Length: 268
Image 1 (cartoon, helix red, strand yellow):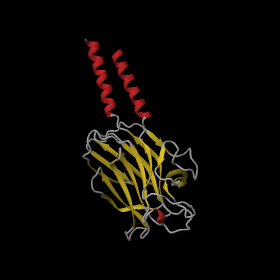
Image 2 (cartoon, rainbow, N blue to C red):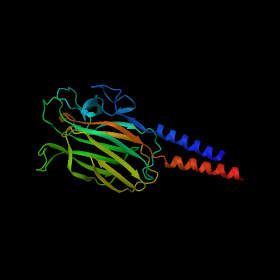
Image 3 (cartoon, helix red, strand yellow):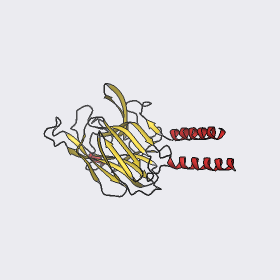
Image 4 (spheres, one colour):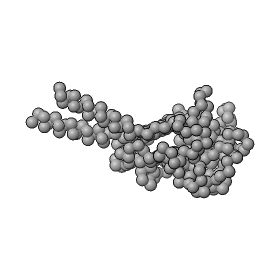
């Protein structure tokens, strides 16, 4: 009976530790115009303040979104780098993509000019998970157009979607793309040897050749202005409801192994 109680407490303790390693934010502590960089562990690689918080009304409710780029033609600054990178470390670096269990989920908006004073110029944006300096999985949003003549947004600017596993070749995700100023869900998860990517109700999955020791340590938002930094358009990649879940199976295995040794010693 005591061993059962010990097992329950150990698993409960592990659950608390695993939960505490999850990073989650909805940017509710920030207000319109705040820079995301420098707050709550967010890091920007550009010297210009190119990260921002923008409230957006989704389903009749005002929600804070944070991200990179700008969606107001009156903002006087421009990026200084070819690709702007706003990143956040995972809450727990013991993330083993090869064994599965890791996930990243969020809602995002490809935002164009808020005040309508400029055309919806489009730049390239991306979401990336990395291991050190190496890509583990990335999703790219490339300027394009909605070419479906039956769509109510026919000829409206849209971003085409692609994904890249590790150092592989980018693959097209969906021909319809992501429409501007529309709240869209994003979920990426790993199971042993596989991934599953969901964007706005569209799903794709596939095999990965990631080594079992692959450690995802950083989440990135990327912005590459079309035509270079001096030609950055009044658009942005904004996210909310970000949740980064680390893989915990390795910790669980170690815990259960320790319990097994304890049980054997108790029976001896």
